[in-house]
Image (tube, rainbow, N blue to C red; front, side, top):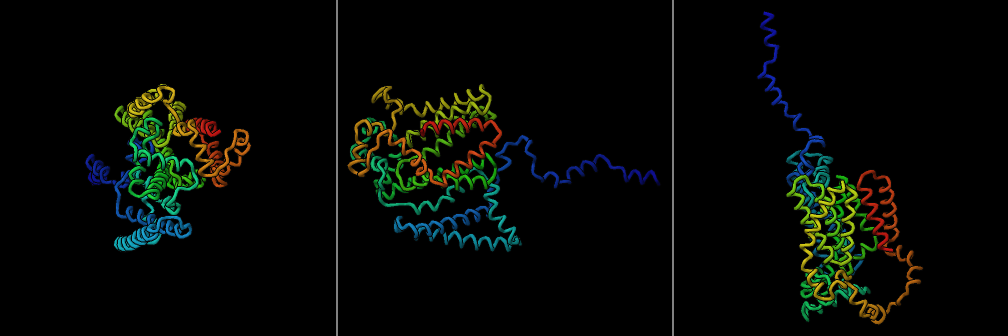
Length: 429
């Protein structure tokens, strides 16, 4: 009898096998970080109904905030207010109705409902969610839209350049080695809607920059709060914020440059040759696009070279060689054009060199805008005041906080960030 009882108590191989395969909750727990499944598999998921409702909720809030800003500023086009009011109310009603029905069906409480609506941002289904997050946060920038060119010589020069090319052909672009992306993006809109349409490109490109900043901040910290702070910090900089109503494409240049440097980094650390070359190709395209948006984007070529500080030198050199080769392929048509007009002496000429050397920029500043011309000693004496005007008090606070965070950062990227900061500071000086 005791033998039979022991036999029943003794687990068999089959019962152990069944036990292992029926304890599913242990397998449903989140996998720890060391498991080699890649960060993409660990973070990406399918987009569900609650994700769509969360996006509509933020769209509603941003649209209504835009309406308030438009009513205060009173500089935007007349159709902006009904457009954003319709979008805000429509997305808000959809969120309330859809959320109420889904919450009642799933029997969710108020706290669980708030968590479901914000999950799309806390646990993003992909990188595009963070880009959309930054874009929606800066939707109120449409309140800064104007229908005229303000007192800015660069905007007037770019508009005159676009109109001249439309009337006389692209020969001007070859002669002056003007960047072509403003003509490709703004040219058709200027032909269709004039200055107000061109100003839309400025705002959308600034939103694209905010989206890229949000994505990069999340990529470094894996926190939507970090992405939120990064976008808010970006909009505290006066020099960035005023790009919403100025035509030169600095925001798009920065967005493509940031993406180019990030993808160049990925090209040096990717685990397969196919991914390394893929990242290198897109990085080369972004760096080339940054230069074609504004030739100040050439600085990102130098910043990309600082990636040797983030990984082993041999690995960095191989990755940067792939990026350089991809960039050279995209830059080849531009190189041929620049060599045809001026040779090596104007191979990397700045976008205002032609206007400066011909004396046109001084005439625009003095005769058209009525602005005084300053010599070098006077400019240096006014540099601190100009820095405050460019950044604003909020921007200075942001720079100070960033410097403090950078000092506490302990990783290889610290050396890269420090090198980029020092180079940028020298360039501004």
